[in-house]
Length: 182
Image (cartoon, rainbow, N blue to C red; front, top):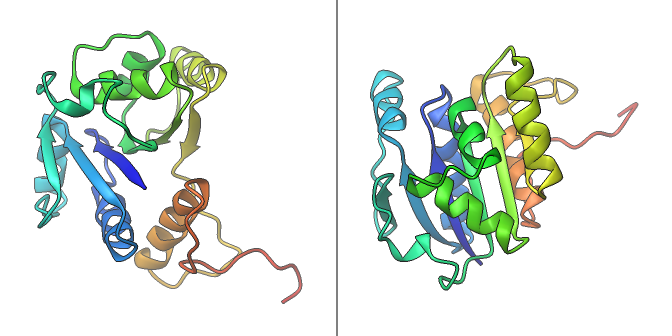
């Protein structure tokens, strides 16, 4: 499997670190894109954005091989995704690498998972998310469940990343699945 994983300037950059760790364990080929705001948020949230053996692109690298539909890729995950990036994708504003790659996913009917961290959502933001859904993208709010009785932030992160892996059809046991009464 070959994936594009991108991060925007929304809080929650720690989710992408866990996702990358889990994908590496499964030997998934990844191409990473970090927006300038993602880098600033990562610095603020004290997260490292260096991953050995994985190609990392800047968001302004529109000449990168992954910007073309001729680059074979199975899916794209944007984690976390900002409302700004959602607006770019919904309205086909492809002036940066994240939006361009997302547009390619929609154009080719490939899996695009947009993990929205923002809250609350304005009416224009909801309209853009609705458009992305209509175009075939998966809108994934970063809303954890509590039926698994998480005991730490790491448990909450594992739930979210496990659900993303589920959407990618990647088996995992990162979280306790719903089983009423047990």
